Length: 93
Image 1 (tube, rainbow, N blue to C red):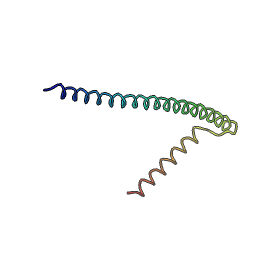
Image 2 (image 1 turned 135 degrees about the horizontal axis):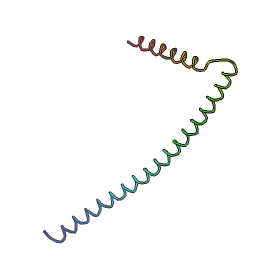
Image 3 (image 1 turned 90 degrees about the vertical axis):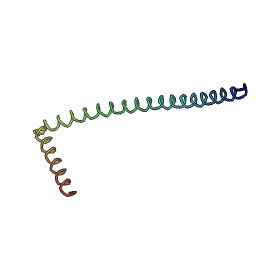
Image 4 (image 1 turned 90 degrees about the horizontal axis):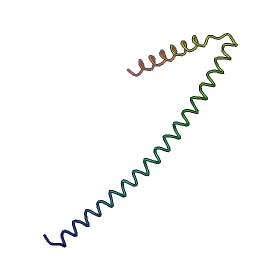
């Protein structure tokens, strides 16, 4: 095996290594962007959870003021949802 073919093989390995390095760098950038997006989404979900808790507290206070039993209303809503889902399932068969 001559030096020329060895140099070609070394150059080929070096080219492959450069390509892999470029791909790893690209993946690293994409991963950093993805982490940023996940963190933003997590913050947004936390904000929504807080707002939902505030709204729930307000609605429960209003319901209590009006003499409405919140648990009964929630139970009836769950039953209605279950019946609607059952009816939908029966119609698709």
